[in-house]
Length: 163
Image 1 (spheres, rainbow, N blue to C red):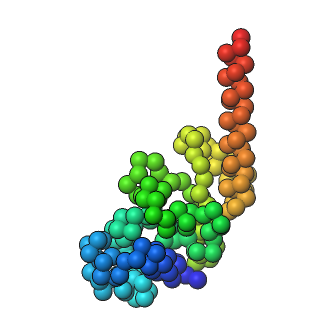
Image 2 (image 1 turned 180 degrees about the horizontal axis):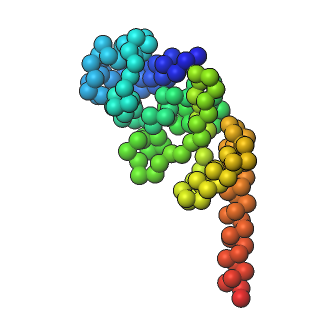
Image 3 (image 1 turned 90 degrees about the vertical axis):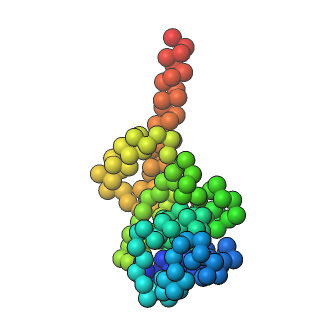
């Protein structure tokens, strides 16, 4: 499955989930109806600027469009992206959503990760990548390492207060 197909499939699925026609989506996004149809039929390569417009119109994170639907688990970001809870994946939210991007051939999937401290998270991820972790192993090891570090620093702070 190529990236254009994944994008078109996700866009159409989310548009249908929101119960928008192509005409309604075009009005909300400010794009022409034939452009929306062309993207869904994989005749038009969508620009980054227009991905943002479509994501805003569908009230979702632009990254949602690039993850193949079979990469989502049961308690998944697909459910968050397609829910009516507009705070969960709204691109205008103050809190960003961080994910590890996995590319296999032409397929791209995303694994959401929790970030306590952006600088610390970047350092953890860089270290794990240097140790050749990737994909789901990287996401799993990241969560494990983050938890270990948070527990360690929490114990250190308690020890300092006890002195």
